Image 1 (spheres, rainbow, N blue to C red):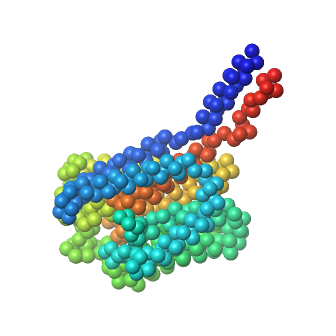
Image 2: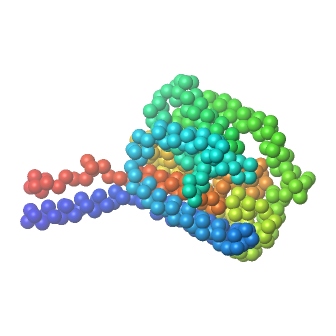
Image 3: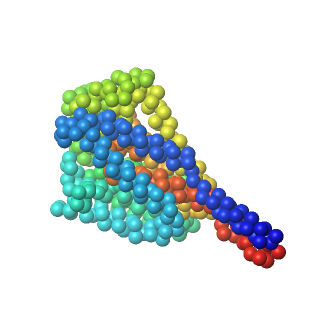
Length: 399
């Protein structure tokens, strides 16, 4: 009789342990849907360009598919990795990210594409340093806020130190130049510090200072100033500085309510430059219309909302590092999606940022998958049952 009761309790303990593996299938499902949609849109938007340059209409699709597969494999490992490891490695990860940003600026190591030094060639692969540094900065800031939260909330020195680190990283990004990534990274850092308890007055002062500095850099640079002026009135020079934006706006106009249908975009036929990368949302709007575009925007809004809900649950559970990581991921994805969609619609100046999980770009795809996987891991740890919560099944307990 005692043996039966002990076996029954053992089975109950195993079931409770399994319940601890609480995966957020809404988040996983949304991530897979966005990834799949991205593959479809890359294939649709790049078919004519790929056929002309590589004699293979699906050239970019196959490359994006490889990146997506790699991203999913890495994501599986990330989900199995406890967040405590990320916390312990947060500073070394930051140092590694900074080293990569320095290496890309060294002639012979970094590779120049379209006037920007953003890539490091590793055999057949090209690594874009500005993508992994986003993840490194989020991990570093989350660890810093856990270690020095009291100083961040009460002293100026505790606040300025991480700001100085992010400023250094943003400066290296501007040397590439990658103005868009610098803006997103700085915005994400300020958002995380605000969530970490920085007083509103100090936060507003430094946010204003950072905004003024970024605007000054844009105005003092001739090519960035040209982008700003063409963004404000692209129709003033529709065949030169305003060409890309006017073609994107035409794509939105052709999309109407429900679009012209998948694969039927005209603007991707050599009219709209970078149709499969920075401006894939314009092609999506042309093929799926206002209805489809609204659904995609809502999908990103749900993703950001879910990230903040997960972060709040982690904070309430006392898992501060996990909470700050989730806050950072939600802010980063939200900012990057907002800027990319705003650029496509002509309400923001061109930044050269990808739309997470949708635009073509292997580095962006892998890092986006890692970010989603980290959110899943945070949610998993939010619902894990501690050892002390599972009854210890022993002979004495059964007795």
